[in-house]
Image (cartoon, rainbow, N blue to C red; front, side, top):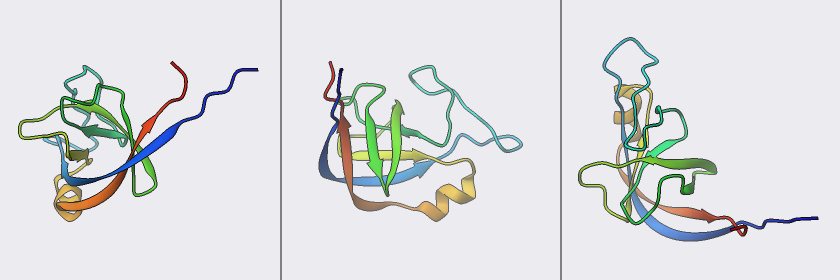
Length: 103
């Protein structure tokens, strides 16, 4: 049998929201990694490779995007609408960085 155990490292991040909604919802854009945006997409700093998983509010989000002004302690959560992004706002939060035990 083969087992993989993930570890979670907790850190404080500044979190904000963004959207690429410019047409009729739901609009899906293309991220810096080339993948379409969806409900799990976040933009993260360059230290984190694409595909890095983060635990935010009990939900796993995946770094598939980059953004101007996104540093290593700032995450930008993708939202389906401008209104949702505004409501989400900007705040500091304890976030888990998930690392697989399998390499």
